[in-house]
Image (tube, rainbow, N blue to C red; front, side, top):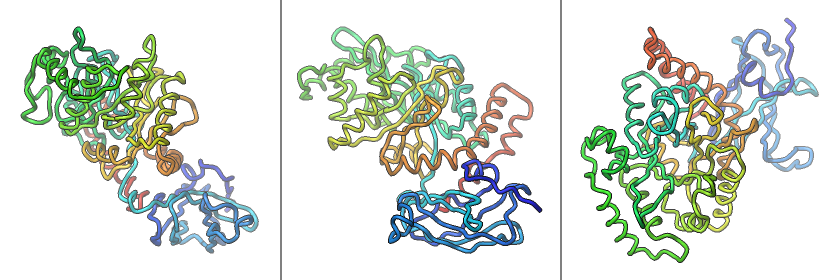
Length: 463
């Protein structure tokens, strides 16, 4: 049979050929399979010279003393697949090429990771978005369903001054057989008064109780009341207090802090208190978009600088949902300059979306977290442990912010893992939307889909 061997493209791997696992441990002999996806891609019975070429060791012609070219004779087995074993010596991407004489006929890729990344899987998520409960456009459960369609593994609805919408989203899908993870969240805005101003936007991602729900004057308490079930996922959250009691505590705290000239003591003290309270709640406190232009920069530059110097936050939202350079550009530069100064803090990227399907929709920015499980505490601990990359997809070509080692890995995954993963997420997201809209048979569809993304991970990640 005539076989049209394709040129070297990433589409080969995703549509015409499969290689698995795609991610393997360094220094361990891994068993890999190359599988044709259809008769048109059948591998020739005479076999090939299989070449393993690391991406980061240079050309074997120019650097002959480096481990940059291994060759294996390989023939397809009766099922049409080529199987081979190889021990990958260092952490990086490797090209797997099938050569027919002097010509490469196929190129696939795998990635070898060090021990600390073994057992950590890539989960895409958003930690900052809004529903119609504050200034968004859709109900929390509709936002969540659309985000799953777009390839997200986890998210929190984080409405302004409100925690209960995230609980509504979680309740809408409670008990469903889905691989999608929803966690509680909110954007914290505590009451202002003369001499008591703090408009810095802070996200409580995954906290077991509402920070807005600690002060009686907030929308959280006005709209949902003080009942624990509406402001916590634990039975006994801290008690609610008046705004005057809150101001008095922060005034006292501000007096204990040595804040430099040019930094507002109350504002800084209130931020520190919020971040500390989020940590007590077991959540991740995120400092959001200081270079958002809301008339002028949202946060005075000297206050931003002091927050970055002391970094009381759990993570910095280095990428957000605006498409002008000043926000994400200046925030990314700030992050890298801080790295050079020895200031190391975790980062995330979020959409800050106000609609699940307009120009600030569910892929403008995101976070890839390398975690042992897609579960609230595992995600938070992994971000705090510096296992996250922020991704900017405002333009067609993605841009990444983070430590180079993880960015390299994330880029490989964007090309070779996430397209396969996202196909499954799209189908599940459609079924989740049908379910919340009351479509007949939606639950049975979800039951049939249950576990697919987990099985995909088991196939493509060696451990």
